[in-house]
Image 1 (tube, each protein chain N blue to C red):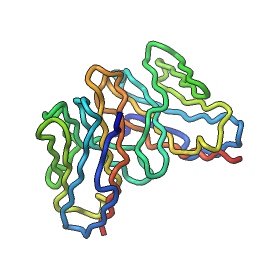
Image 2: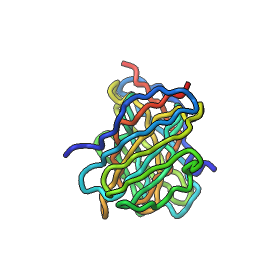
Image 3: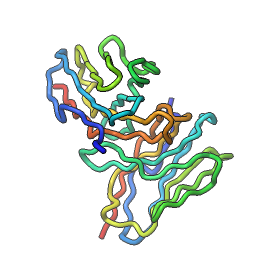
Image 4: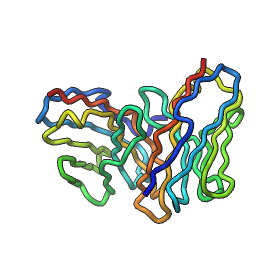
Length: 114
Length: 111
């Protein structure tokens, strides 16, 4: 079974630029999460999708962050414009519907904003 | 608001020793308590998890102890090995929903 795929693995941008991250969850997993992991901290949820609908985006800075999962499969997270404090690893995770609750994480995208 | 507090921040253990990491939570609605292991450059991976209807769960060298009344749970790694050196995160969630993570413990096991 293939794991959660994310790209790119690394990205360096200047502040005020825009950036997009892509995630392809495990096949058949209905729930998809985007987390932000700042160095030295645990992952913090940005947004949760159930199929192509948003379940929770209460912690998403909506003035600059956006995410979509149009066909209920892969997802894109965008930041526009980026700030220095957005430097972090962005993790995508997925869970199976009716499963144990175990989240399967991708390798993450390390973003550096200069 | 920090809903899951994890300690210690870092831990150094000799090979063969016992590693103990503690977590405390606030929300009594949490009903799933996983521990994740993360190696550098990788995403977190589930190590072991427990639900509040049991006080202990053991899988190989890894044990979770759960104290519902104190709202605390801990991870014990027996016979710690250098390959266990990683960052460990406790987490808590309601059902199969989003997880709230602790800030992690960096474990170093010295040969």
